[in-house]
Image 1 (cartoon, rainbow, N blue to C red):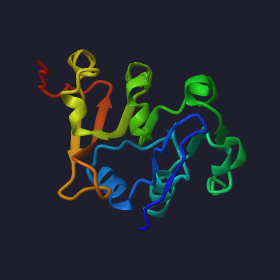
Image 2: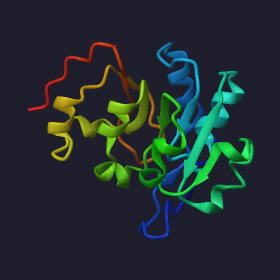
Image 3: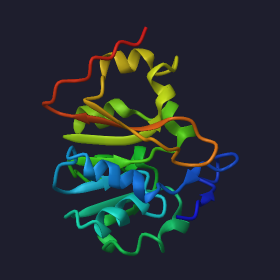
Length: 182
């Protein structure tokens, strides 16, 4: 798969959009952890995650939210009423109450991402994040309170020049992992 890097939003510096590789989505699907049902990608970009799920035969429906209007054409594989162009933090669940979130949060956005809103309000959340987030100063307290129920790591790098990346998974009703960030 050809790597794609674009500006994430006009106010972002240097761009922070890299399409999620199919093998990363396959790992989540093959894990057996992903429930069936309506699913939203709140940082959809060009829709790589959702397209791969459809290609693999996972049943939807699917919803996408993306801040960059330029991505609307690439998201045209979804029905018009399943796409919102706008900031997820403003659009949120008032628009789409799908109980499952699968996303690749732009890494520069991780510090402002209110992941507690996702974890508190949705049945299942899976997001790609650097493994460094487990020990990052900005997330240490948060991860002590919101321990993931699972991590899926990769034998190979997702993108050239990146360190370890993992699917962080939270699922309501499942015992969290034994993680202590000190």
